[in-house]
Length: 495
Picture 1 (cartoon, rainbow, N blue to C red):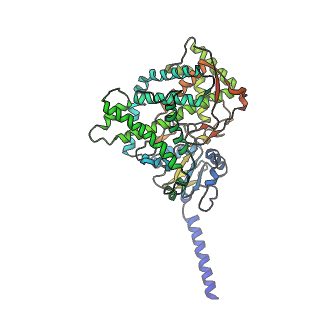
Picture 2: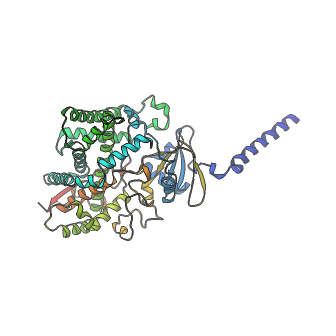
Picture 3: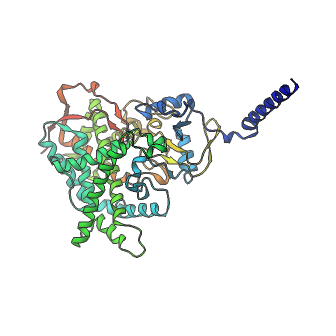
């Protein structure tokens, strides 16, 4: 009996010691952020729902602006306020500069070449410098103004001969052609071509597959067994795109043509002494640039048109500004955009409500670090944790935005928000060293495409749909596409 009592006392003392050790003696910084209770094995996967950005926004109202989830074996930290986003993207930018790589982007070892998914290493810095100097520098952007104008004119011509326009598809083709002309001095797509439709399908299906819920991202063992068929599906379209790019590169090398485009610049760089840039590496770089650029720009234009058609008073105001400024002009040129303040407000408000991606590309913690909240709590972010910054929710934060779910372009009249990622209340293109390098091109193209559609045409909805009946739901994925594509009837007013 005495031995039982002694054992019980020792056990009780041990439990008490462990409790005190983990909850009192250890500092508060050792604790993970709060979050919903995880189920055995699967953790919080069911909490994500079909629209994770919306589900996680709801959960953050319960658990706070920094929250931890267990997604299978993956610890995930969700950040949902400007203050915590600044802590991650500015104060801890270097530690959080790693990338969590979705399984689908490991196909063909893409993550080892990718500017999106590679670690912030010397190769990544080299690629970033290359595209900044040869694509997105101010001289390069200015030199391509005429090319962008030409692509917009092609879009207007297509819309003129169309009875109904699928806005997202039309602007996707225009953007695809712009990029292919900038990079290869050739069009890869045509609005009515089966071949270009196939190329667009490869990009769209690859992005759709990448945006799907993949068990292999939560349970590494499933990387060995493709139970959902996502890797098999992604591999086919992924491989076709890489092959198309490699064929274009190889033909240019064999022809020995010089066109002074981005492809020429990359080939020349690859042939320099000690260069680590290969033909395969160039093809993977084009994969990143096409898949991110085309979908982002076309989706933004589609959302802007949707919001304007849903709010006829805003549409009228935008068109009146455009037409008063344009006079006899058939098309708006890039230098004119700065003279169209209301159009700029429309684009800013569209990006607030419908950012290019609901989350920044997932970051990965390179080491343990602490994060504090506005309530002055300290939480631990463990090494290798996935970090999700919910840009969608931050853009609808009622502490920052009055009537946050309403489309009110005029709200930006009293503020100086910009796209540069320095203000953590509004950073639709991301912030820090991993922010989107193509935001300058995206900004220009969205304004050009939107103004061309509004200046040259009046618009009405297909089948007599009332503006208030437009479906405003989005489809979760790599980008924030409309769940139901916008179909609209153009009425030409300028020739």
